[in-house]
Length: 289
Image (tube, rainbow, N blue to C red; front, side, top):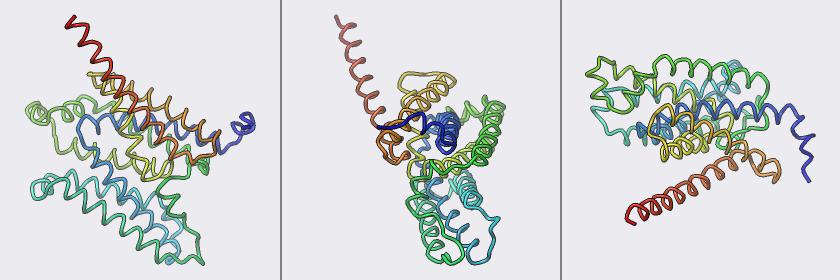
């Protein structure tokens, strides 16, 4: 039987809950723009590209003793670079977006594998593939909490300042251009915010689980909300409630937390789809009657 008082008094468990809550808020806000703009696969491409940066960091640390080059820094460099490439108008004019995503996705993952292969394990012991891909939620430190909170605050402030321009660009780029908005700049800013969000969450839930946290709560909110602000608020509440529930289930059943979060979100999404379908049929029946 789980000793909840003992578990929740642990600083590691507390850090996990705090970081998860912060990332849920950030993922819900940025994920709402991702879902509305229909760039989920862009997010997936950026998230998987970060693996190359993580591998590069471990390679530089072990072979060149560049201990200051942390995995999060390497992931940020790769993610932001991928985001800028994807948002570049020149690239979009020359190539299909899905082709660019596929290239960056595969090359980023492949570079990560190659760099990890050449890591000198006599110097450092790098995180295993499972940790990189699925996260290490229970090993977050207090400095991790402060870093995630600071970066999240900066991104949320930027979103608040640019909300009108981001909203119009997300819904209708043509109308945004007619309104005098620099659409290219807004797309670059949005893609870079997606990249930074992916980097923060990669350390928390891992590369594989990023898409689940960034897309499922906003997608569920999108079923019942039409206004962007309402969608952001609903996605945030959904994300926090379901993710906290998933963490409690993970602790009680001793299942990896990152995978548990993804499963709980996925099951909840399917239940929401079924509930919406049933409610729609009932409403249609009442109208016909």
